[in-house]
View (cartoon, rainbow, N blue to C red):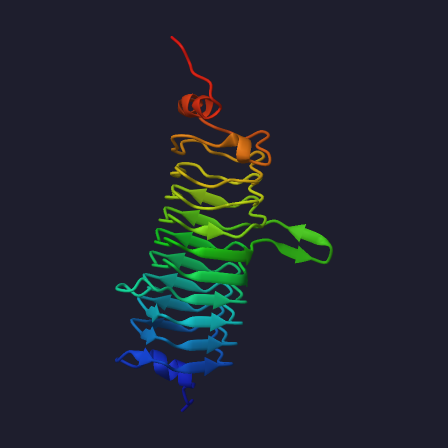
Amino acid sequence: MVKKSSLEAAFSMKEPVIGMRFASEDLTDFITSESKFADCRFNDCIFDGAKIRECEFIGCSFSNCSFKEAEFLNCIFVDRETQAGSAWNYCDLNEAKFKACNLSNNRIVKCEAFLLEITDSSAVGLQFDAEVHRKISKRMMFGGVVLQRCKLQYAVFAASSYEESRFESCDLRDCSFVESNLSRVSLMGSSLNNIDFTGATLDFANLSQATFDEMDLAAMASFKGMTVSRDQHENLLRSMGILTSG
């Protein structure tokens, strides 16, 4: 009989796992559901290809962990009462997927997130600082992130390149993309009221069907070839101080 690792055993516990530290554990392709962790620390753990469903990670931190191609479904990473989120530091989130999760007030710091997908999730107040492209030798391989139908109010995206990413049908009100490269990014169908694009580059970005009252074009670094839909023309003209008569 193969002995379970301490982390694998913790996932099988019925009661919440509180205040434990897990280091250098390998749960590649692990499948689990309905586990609860609070104030736990995960260091140098591997969850590549894991499928984690309906689990809670409250006030937890993940440091130097790998989640390549891992899938999270209906998982919670924030305390419902205090709204304190979990932290992801120097983690590999390449091609990971989060669906119907709560990542509000989480901090993703110095991570790799090539083709990361977050869909149908809440990530209000998310702090996102990750490399979303992949460098192979001297060649940059553009990937970006995919965020669809997510609540992202007050999220802060660190100044970086998000080229070719998709932020579609999301609530991006009061978000910050200060000094970021958003070239060829899709913001289709998203709510952009009070979004901060100061110093950002939106060349060939697609804002079709996105909603906003005004857009501070003067604050942007560039918006060459930006695509908008006809129903947005009036608001854009108003943003430039131009009124339409007749």
